[in-house]
Length: 222
Image (cartoon, rainbow, N blue to C red; front, side):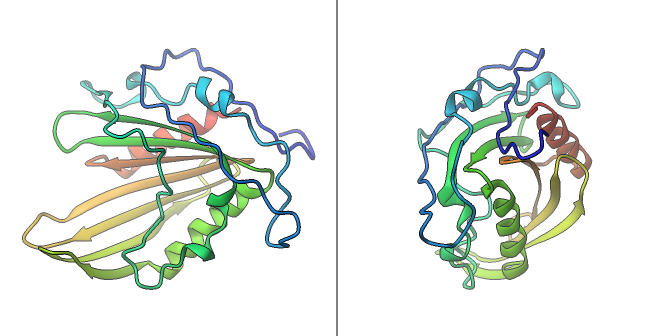
């Protein structure tokens, strides 16, 4: 990283990326008079996010991985928007208001094995704030219960590993218990390089694999 330079370029990998879900969204810029965060200058252009190599099926362990078609045209939201937690307040987590572009790709292998990859760019300085927000929401909503029309749920999120890639990184174990349904375990790796953040979530995938894929994606952010 060049000193004082908050812009990072995503360089296309030699690996051919299959046509995945590519969603771009512009986000609000920082109000410099609010006094509630770093200045929003020189964001990474959405076109750079769009052309980036993130992951390809050949990066995955095992065979049979394929790109999963998008089911919605809406841009992906924040992985940690835990509104079912009664203590969750979106106003406490400002970084998402300063997201300048986002790209998502999804992959599947048979039944019950899925990977979602989201790359986000933030206005200058807000990438680090995004990781701060992630740590804060995991602290606030580490464990909670909620009910829908059919089931009672107990959900927990706990940091399982840190500092394994990029400028900052977290591996989070998420567990959902909702009898009589089977317990669901997901692992999510979040890696930051400057003001770019990659989030890899695996369902039915070992934590080491999720962390490995996030590390690969992070290496392609420079």
